[in-house]
Structure formats: C-alpha cells, structure tokens
Image (cartoon, rainbow, N blue to C red):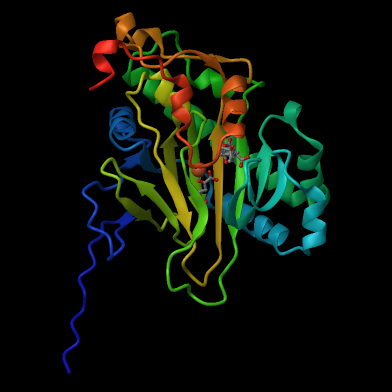
Length: 335
Ligand SMILES: C=C1C[C@]23C[C@@]1(O)CC[C@H]2[C@@]12CC[C@H](O)[C@@](C)(C(=O)O1)[C@H]2[C@@H]3C(=O)O
Ligand SMILES: O=C(O)CCC(=O)C(=O)O
Ligand SMILES: [Fe+2]
C-alpha cells in the first residue's frame, strides 16, 4: 500500500491549517537589537498588526517561574479560586468573558498593572497563593512594560512623532491603565471532532499587547482577506499586537488585528497577555503630526475611560472602532 503524505505548508511562525488555504503573509520576526528594528516594527504594524520579537532581554527563568505559579493557581480547588471572583473586571473568572454574555472554554485572572487601581478581587488572587506568585507577576509586568515602551519608542522615532515619548509615556506613567491577563484553557478529554471556541473573535481595545503562551497552539489571527491562520510555537518568544487605540492615534496607519483562540487539542493551554493602556483620563485622537489635512482625519477624540465603557457595553465580536469614526463627507459615503 502506498501512503501519500499530505504536504503541509508552513513557515517558522505561522502554521497553516491544512484545511485552510496557505497564508500569503508570514509573521515578521523582529530582532529588537537590530539597528533596523524600528522600520520593521512600523512595517509590521501597518501590514499585519502582529509581529514576533526575539532578543527581548527577558530572562527565560521568569517565563517558567510565572507559568509554574499560574498553573498552581489554576490547579487549586474551584471554591478557593472563586474567592477571587467574579471579575469586576479584575480577579478570577471562569467561562464568562466580560459583562455582555460572552462565553469561552477558559478560566482566567485579570490583574491591574496599576497598584492604585488594584481591586479587592486582585488582592484576593494573591491571598489564595504564595508570595512567589505575586513576585513573579510583578517582575513580569515590569518587563512587559519595559518591552512595550521600548517598542513604542522605536515607533515614535521611525514616524518622527512629536513630542518625544508621546506614546511610551502613556504606558510609563503611574496612572497607566495597563493590565495582565492569564488565560487557562483546560485540556479536553477527547480531541474534539471540530474546532471549538476558547476565546471568541475580537480586537483588543488598548495601544499594544504583548503575548506569549505555553507550547500549545490555539491562537489565530485574521488576515486582510478574512482568512484565519494559526500561530504556534511561541513559548519562549513574545508576540506583539497593535490594538484599536494605536490604530486611532496613527489615523488608521497601524492596523489592529482580529484574533481568536480555538481549543482543539487534548493539551491545556496557558497564555499571558500584557495590555498596554493609557491613563483613564487620557484623551485619545489621531496625532496631529500624522494628519496633515483636517479632512484626512478618520477618527474623533474620546477618553480612554469613555471608550472602555463603550467596550464593556458591547459584545466581544462587535465592531468597536465604529464609535471613533467621524461622519464621512457625503462624496465618500458611497465609496
Ligand atoms: C466582552 C468584553 C471582555 C473585555 C471587555 C469586553 O466588553 C470587550 C473587550 C474585552 C477585552 C479584551 C482585551 C482584554 O482582555 C480585556 C481585559 C479588555 O480590556 O478588553 C477584555 C475585557 C474583559 O475580559 O473584561
Ligand atoms: O489566549 C490567547 O492567546 C489570546 C487571548 C486574548 O485574545 C485575550 O485575552 O484578549
Ligand atoms: Fe485578545
């Protein structure tokens, strides 16, 4: 008998589901120490809204340490985890995502990176665990903030954004509304016949996010042509996503990327995402240095707090950028 092996098309970063058409777009891999990194970052944010970084300087032990601590948390009896829930939006949550009825095959903790905004639920997460969990989380958040600011500063330089540190300051300041989410997608007893939703499709609202996971695949990003591609093998590297707020600030030059998580394996998946957000009172609008003529301006101004409340009233899959969109002039509305 002759067994024909199906050729599987993949590059090092994006595994293309054999049932889907091959991806025309490989995920850019950017070496943060490369002199050309800033040009590559801008190109990736314009074309895909997604890239992978290497040579990021985060010590590998920290990744294993945080992963072990998080696994210990999720392995605790349900009644202990529930002491840090329901999420307000911080704290422990299970299956319910956000306040609008979205559900997923996951449990998670959402932690505020700003100690001043820490809720009792955040504190409750750490009351159920050893001090080593809090220490690992705090160091990890500091590292993610450093990396996010580093990337934003490269963007500022490449796009000649004025004043200096306009973007990175939003994340650097004490009042920044950034958060860390640790998602645990439990293993399935049987490999499901068809892919199931772990985290439904959505676009994140912040500036940028830094993402990594254990060795289990599941994350998919949506390409411009509407096709979905799987991203995998990202246990020791970080992925960056540009989000809705940076799309607004760059007047649409950067693209926020739609993504989702499928749970189609018997292995559990753990992911950690740092969402770099501005202070709640910050007014966000297209940067004047990037909008030469007023009529080219695509989005109106909102504060982060106003936008966040809008997000919390919507469903995961809703088109959340719409609230920023200025009324188009009549001659463009039928285009
Ligand atoms: C359904 C929702 C969950 C979410 C708030 C929202 O109304 C829409 C955005 C969701 C998201 C995605 C990125 C982050 O994980 C998050 C914390 C955020 O800021 O926006 C979540 C929110 C959440 O899970 O509470
Ligand atoms: O678990 C992941 O890899 C991504 C989850 C996600 O998109 C989110 O938490 O916003
Ligand atoms: Fe997301």
